[in-house]
Length: 151
Length: 224
Figure 1 (cartoon, rainbow over the protein chains, first blue to last red):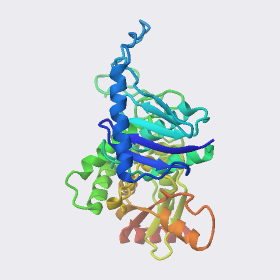
Figure 2: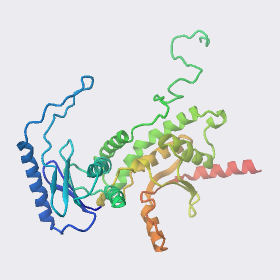
Figure 3: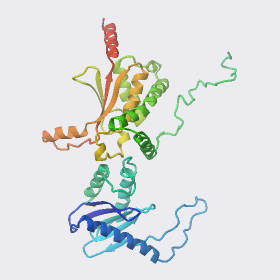
Figure 4: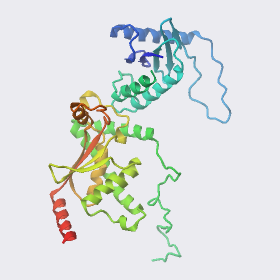
């Protein structure tokens, strides 16, 4: 099983992180990468508008109301014969795009773990500014440790 | 003065060790604090220190100053709390003091002892405490322009406070990253697993001259 690459797209649609784990995808110029990220962001926003109203969430009466309104998720999976792209959007609007082989199992768990690493080593890093490109050595190392060990 | 049986006005002092000086406020079985909460707090401390800091050295000094009062207080607190009445006397010699820092203080702060304790070969006044993976640096990746910064300067400040509070004035305690040097050294020797501890940090403690003089006199006193 192969995980090809990871993109992180900021809330405003900028590509803030891209990382290739296994060769397999064609190399794109950095300009094209930005364009892919931008177009996906736009498409994601539109598909969100497109889908019907989600049903109101059924919250058990004994829990506190959640501040997050139920939202349509937008585009989540893109699949081709060669790869599968899964998108995971956090509550704050950051998108993680994971490019894998089409048969890759457990993508949800992988994305969840990557989100965890992001929360730890990017968001808890005093020298990271939100919406800016991610340059955190420990995040890279954590991803390597996690993805390559699984791969 | 009121006797102990009829508590008068003022501070009541229970004899069964139940004041906040004797135990943590958090008395659950494993009294642990949230690491994430600390991380976010530490972020704010660093950005507070960064405001108006001229350079990396200045920034480290500011972090050091934030840790210093903590050290002074922790020394008293840990000594008061120690169960053994003999060990609740403050350390009077250098080695017991350093042991106290590497063991009790480290255990209290980070839940484990420090990784190594050494005396500098070149300078008799210099001692080194090693920490393979400082807890305060767990989530911190340094940007290139600040690559010489080590945020464990905060811990160095705590250590400095303990030394000063115990009556061992220092020229300063500083934190240095040594993980990379070690990796290079290991790489030169052709060893594998060079970057075993990439965040390895050494705390350099340099005592003032008078501390060493006193130490010498005390050593003479015990041996002769």
